[in-house]
Length: 101
Image (cartoon, rainbow, N blue to C red):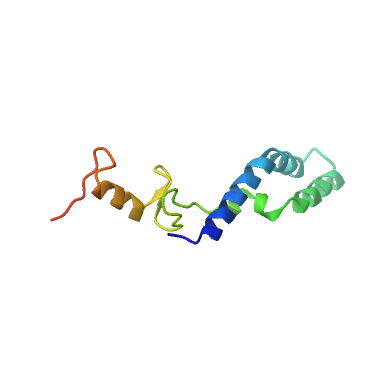
């Protein structure tokens, strides 16, 4: 199990990323638009830099919903390989059996 502080910090980052997503996208579009004068694009970049760092989607870490483990994460299942194997061994994942030979 991961530290609860790390899990909570990641949840906070996810919440901030959702909150600022539209504002961040608008400022990025404005900063990249070649038809806008250079000064306005520069101002858009400055406003983008003023947003909280934790509101950037790249700061969010993929973590297992079951255990909070950051490594060995399956995006489709939103859980780590360890948690998936444990659930499969207990028969809680339909159609999945533990292979052994």
